[in-house]
Image (tube, rainbow, N blue to C red; front, top):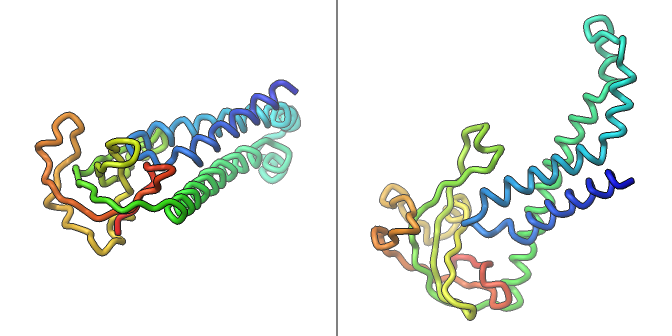
Length: 200
């Protein structure tokens, strides 16, 4: 019972982390990584007893002799289901984060000007294995809670009418923002949650 409780807590922790903080671009890689770890360990812990029983079921059964029986009675389908659940949890939490953003921007929008700082490339734990990186455009703007540095995914930026030429940009360096080409954009941010913003 304790093992199952720990598994549920880990899954919920990953879900809350991704839902409420998945939009924090400067920490995106860490949030993705920790969410993946929480989901994977949580689901493994939750299904541990069940998969152990399935492992015992296939003792003495050879995959070469009876592959269908080995798959049906073995834990392989549980592992595949775990991967599917993790993908679903990521998809649901991403969508909930987007809904929170839209709700916050609708209820407490504030117009201001943001300065473009450059681009940043990040990768999560899964991205490091696949050698895939995600690009973000980084902006800085003044809010009711002070100066904020936040970003948006590159694909979202390309959808705006104010999209600019990527080849003229430089890699974002937080330690030397003076090296970046200064460009400004009209944005709205949520007064209640200033890290939620979008380009007009």
